[in-house]
Image (cartoon, rainbow, N blue to C red):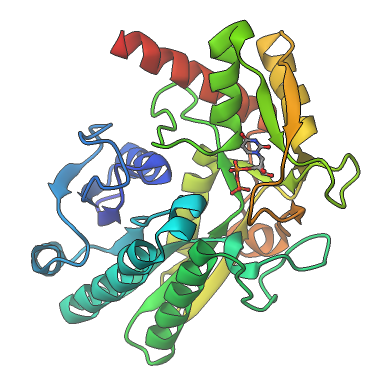
Amino acid sequence: MSETYLVTGGNGYIGSHMCRLLAQHGATVHVVDNHAASPAEPVHGYGTFHRMDIASAECGELIAWLRPTAVFHFAALANVPQCQADPLRAYRDNVAGSLALFQHCVEAGVRRVVLSSSCAVLGEPEVELLDESLPLRPASVYGHTKAMVEQMLGDLCSRGSLDGLVLRYFNAAGAAEDGSLAENHRPETHLIPRLIDAHLAGEQSTFCIYGDDYDTPDGTCVRDYIHVEDLARAHLLAERWLVGKEGMHTFHLGSGKGYSVREVIEVFEKVVGARLPSRVGPRRPGDVARLVASVERARAELGFEAKWSLEDAIRHALASRLAMATTAG
Ligand code: UDP
């Protein structure tokens, strides 16, 4: 592969795995990251880093100069509680930032944009498996911002200014198979890293389950966990699939299998070979009972199949966390 790709938010969790995969395929990778939602220093060496905001004029100049084959757009404030607490920042970073980025692409004649989106744009549809035909009904500030960006991209694609892919993730989990590129959010709100925190903290820690009175088999929330390396691979498949096509195309990326919080804890205990004491706390505002992807479209069109299981994701997440602690220590 001799293409040049631009990865916005390439210092973040999913973006860094994307950079690694592209570099492994021989592509030239450029990262644009302002480090506002990712660590202060580059967390990997898979590409040339440009410390800048996607909305800045210099980012426009960079895109015009590079003329990348495609832009993988991950840069966003992706922390749901933070978006809820600071809508101004969420709309500025996610919506205004994306609008400026799309403008840079249109002005530079870069057509292909792969947007990192989320099942949060769907709210809580009352169907077993969520497919791409469902209407946008976001129920959180984060979901609103992603839905707006999808709509902007859709309008630009309908007008023929860009060719777009909307990839809606369910719950990204895990780390690179070799234990590198750990998930490193500050603050950390996600289930698996928090289970690891509780496990590593030992006896003084009890893990808190956010509510067990949901309308699910064991009362805890059900989610569809997809390994971050599978996610990155799906992006590459989708970007190649888009070649020669026009318009905007949406895919749901998940495993198609739901796990309740209690089931995730069981798998976690199996991986670490130890019990993890837990207690039930109140519901977390904004959480919905069940979000599980229909993977039919991604399978049929892209030939995408998740390769890693939840157990693999937990194993890799733990290995990468331990590796990170060793490096830091
Ligand atoms: N969760 C929990 N305790 C925690 C963190 C998360 O019970 O300390 C639950 C949360 O309520 C949700 C599920 O785990 O039902 C997945 O949460 P996460 O934040 O990882 O992803 P989300 O689905 O919110 O994007």
